[in-house]
Length: 145
Image (cartoon, rainbow, N blue to C red):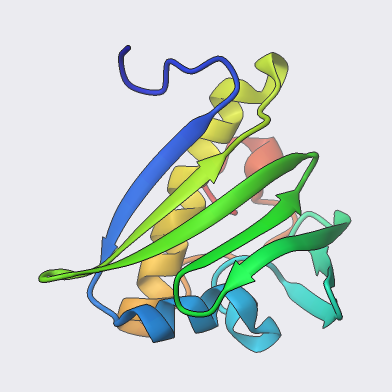
């Protein structure tokens, strides 16, 4: 099997210099998610309301969470899992998208690249790589989450 050949599963890994507990914080805390992932994150219990730069709103559900190790949740019609592993080079974060539909597959493969690089900018360097412009979003062909 070659790279991203699974019919529904997409997996990406990224090496982060930050420790696992900081990476976990950026995945699970509203204020931290707003630094790299979404314009607004409002969690109540296991439900998170996301607002994206293009105005989309999405209610997602946390399925499972192990502190500093993993987060599994629904995300835009799919099920995703973040796995955190400490390494001698920092933290390896693996994201697995389990239910990508064929019509969105190519877009989702590229989209995770954008999302993970925004995370790296925020968690490792304290910068926000996103443009925060409703007129320069994914729909207009911009590599921006």
